[in-house]
Image 1 (tube, rainbow, N blue to C red):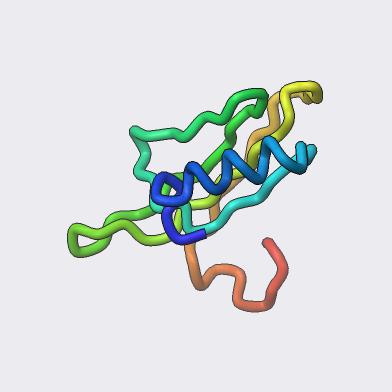
Image 2: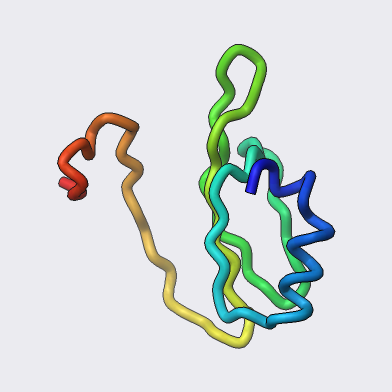
Length: 88
């Protein structure tokens, strides 16, 4: 999805029609001070990075609020550090 905000209406329609348990989104193009909450879903995301005044990347996971889990911590590995396909 190129730009979560640009496709918000379409994503909302898909969520209301199919009621998925979880949705993974790439290329959200949302910066660190902006999230995109959806009704009945918890939003977890890593912001896009700014390069030459434009945003690139960004990922998000939407999980239905019916499900709870303990907090999970993660470590971010910059591009190029996982060239073998496995996390260190």
